[in-house]
Length: 200
Image (cartoon, rainbow, N blue to C red; front, side):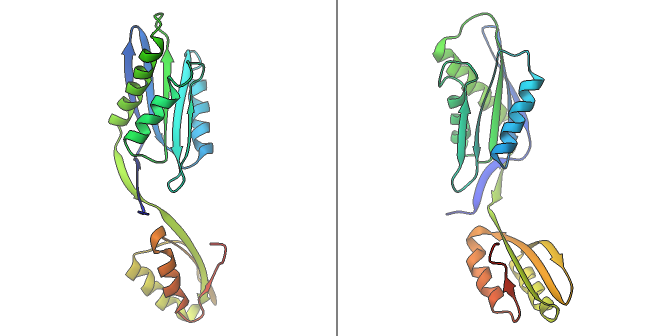
């Protein structure tokens, strides 16, 4: 599996109007289901006077968790088309919320589906799509005398050191591309005194 995945760099917004109804759309990068639902709660409070606050998210990369919420619209006319846009853009770790202010004219199920799909697409069209790398953490310790050898490996592999404690026994946490994890563990194990944290 590739380490690369596509998401959005920052929040973005869109707007779609149909027969007096306004569909305000908001796209957010999110890294957990809790973060996504917290954002849904925030917008429900912010737009408390709106008729509907519908949403969809895809969270996670290897086994994405998805959810679509219609918030009182006919089943499948809001959340599903929003989720469809996330999928068609090939994105992960993204939440889209569409807020509807009713304009007095019923749109029918077909009209609603088109409206929510288009509103979601407008928010994504305004977003900056970026490629990110799926990372894995490796934690380990080593004797101080081996630090230079460890840091040489870190530099060669262009690893990101996320935590370091220097003492007689040094502690390190590094982030690497997930697909490189086993190979890097093998290299680390060849350095004298390196002890891997089994829980990392």
